[in-house]
Image 1 (spheres, rainbow, N blue to C red):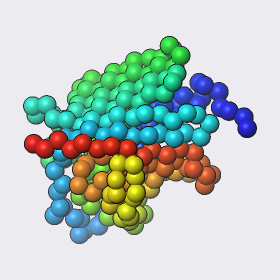
Image 2: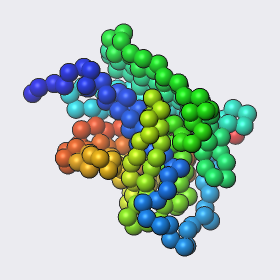
Image 3: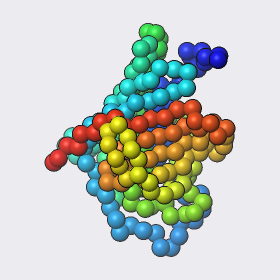
Image 4: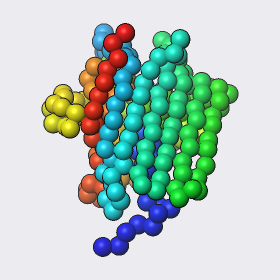
Length: 239
């Protein structure tokens, strides 16, 4: 079986970081929001430390760390990914406002065999759209709070690590029970697609009470699963 070349396959490491990239929440829905827009349930964020295993076809498994913590008046989301020859990290700082999440600072860095790059977005670049870490948090919060009620789904708009605008569509499917290395969890299942590449689909499973926490993510291309992210341990920080 032919293996993908390192430069191309390395995208799978920031694919976690692209997995997590598949999110936003500041976007307008693809169709008009129904009049009975539900805002009665508001799930409050809570700090946590999570670890994941990322399985990518043709590559060794990657270890993922994800931490959400609060510092004074803002929240910080930090992700780190590593395998034998590659590393990646992303950090976002953001505020919660009545309108949603407002990003104020984003940094990331990637390295493959000593070759890589570092990226930064400041408050000026993040004025209109969130970075993808903050967007992931906001997406999960909106899913948990039932903000997207259209049967057709809603649209996501955010910035990638270089500050380029990205658009994705998401639709809430149902709830299901997952049996993971970290334990048994009830999960909210969300389907995410890129309108420019409909053959590529992702399925997110969010924790129903912890905004920002992924339980599992599946990535499929042409109907075949190429990658899977699963929660292996979770520590919730009690205020």
